[in-house]
Every structure is written in structure tokens, then in C-alpha cells.
Length: 309
Image (cartoon, rainbow, N blue to C red; front, side):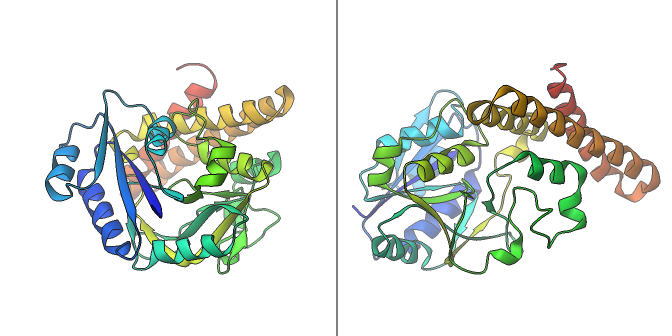
């Protein structure tokens, strides 16, 4: 078996069907298995997969187990030399997986390979990150990364897009699309299941680097990531989950003082955006719907960070 492809689904039926279709079309030259792990969807996703793609293996969880745990369930059933974890809202551009497979075969030091990922309008998506530091967190909180978008010094943990035009080693590849060497996976272990959703990519990539395996960005293979397939159904909840996951990552990898400083910077980040959202709401009536979304997210996250929810 060349590839085992694991897809975690939660109420993304149409996106999931398109994802599986493009995977099957792209892997005709490879021996593959597709494993869909469903987190208790209620939109008929699994019935549709059974109807249209009977060869796909399905695992149905009785409750929403989160991203990391559900992926680990799929990994536990995988038999391939490589395991691909692909979000259900991803669509492959032809020859994506074969190119990644050949590159991994030729470069045995790579543990994780991530392709070039595009937005739905085919612009480049930021899927590579620098290891987070207090400085990158400060730049993101104060908006310096937005004011100076081409500066590496003032960049947040998201890498400057201009640096993503060549094959290169990176600290972190986003969890929307990974190809992972099974040998490396057996050494490093699966995703940390204490992360329900978000930040498990930062943790996993750090563990691969620590174990001596490279994490590589590979722009010669491409895919489209529509984004928000699951999180758009409950944006406030998932915004808070992102805050929770970030705090959890810093607790795992840093000491108390650094972790508390990060929490303070995260609170400043959301308070500044709350103030900006209110100003935008008052001064730009035509943009009030967008401003309301910013206000709601920032208020929910600020409340969580000060312990009000």
C-alpha cells in the first residue's frame, strides 16, 4: 500500500464528496486506501459516501471526538507507507499526491511534507508557520505584521507569503494537508489527543523536528483549501477553541512566566480587535455585519481569557 488517506468529517457532506472524488482521480497510479472518520455528523455525510464511493472505509464516532483523536483513529487503521491527513474541505489539483509521493520516496529524511495550498480564488494560502514566540505573538496582537506585511522581522508566526515560492524546510505545516512517513510516525507517535482542535499541528511538527525528521514545504504539488468547512457552523465556539488550544500549546512547551505573558498578549490581541470592531461598526454603517462578527468573536475570546466563560 502506497498511501493511506485519512479524512475527518463533521457535517461537510458536499465538500467531503468533492474531496474524495479528487483524491480518487489523483491516485490512479498509486495503491491507496481512503479512510473517513466521521465525528457524529447529522447531515447524511456517511450515507452519501457509501452511495457514491463504496470502496471508502468509514468509521463513525458516536460523538464529536475532535480533530486529533479522530485522525488518530484513522491512523490506527492505516496500512500505507505514507499516511495523508487531508481536511474534508480540500480539493486536490491533478498530480498532487503522486508528486508528493515521489518526492518523499527520493528524500528519506522527510517526516512531514505539505503541498502548496490555494484559497478558493486560487490565491496563495498561508499554511507554513514559524515556531511561535512571544515576539511573533506581540507583532500579531499589535497588528505590526499587517502594517508591515513584507517584513520578516515584524512577521507573526505565519510566514511571509513571498518566502513560499520554493521547496524549503519550515517549522510548521498547517494540518489541513499532511503527507507523513509511516516509519517516522511510528517513532514520533500520533497527534496529541488533549488538543481537541487547533494547535495540534504546531505540537506535532515540533515533535517531528525533535525526533530528527524534517518538515518540508513542497510547492510543486498543489491543492485548494476552502476553509471553515466545519468551523463556519459554529464560529464563536471554534474561536474560543482556538484560544484554548493556543494556551494549551504554550503550557505544554513553555514555563509558567512565558505562558502567562503569552496569555496576556492574546488578551490584548482580542481587546484591540474588539475596540476596532466597535469603531468600524460606528463609522462604517455599510460594513456593520462584518464588524458585528469581529465584535462577537473578540468578545467571546476575551471573556474566555479572563475566566468569564
